[in-house]
Image (tube, rainbow, N blue to C red):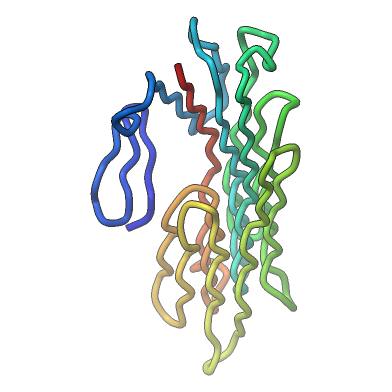
Length: 203
């Protein structure tokens, strides 16, 4: 099980869930986007942290690359001058297609992972504009034929990529931005998962 995020909290791989900030700190609010929308700054917010992950690439026998991740923190929320910011969440690529870019306005963004090709697994996407920019994991090599195997999908910031498979259907990626796992037949290769934009507000 990977790390998952909903509008009410974060669930970690050990199944524990965090729904608020650790004790001893100030107020905390979480806004999670798994589809494109608009971030609205909450009144009174003092600091903001944004995590942006692009969509994972689809597999094509070889595994797809994972989406990149950008993490940015503003210790003074007034550095974001507008009360609203457009949010784009990149879709995961179907087999043979790249993942799409996610972004938080013009502040930071993360490209999607690329699809596997006839020679290599897909490349991971890149984060940009953040204090921390993370490249997504590359997809694994695969091969066709009776002795072939599907390449594993690239791991994202959130979780591992899709499992490669020889004969059966592949398993999908475990979390946001994961690369699709390859099968020895393209029809059995999995899609990458969509990206995410997570906005944490501190008061």
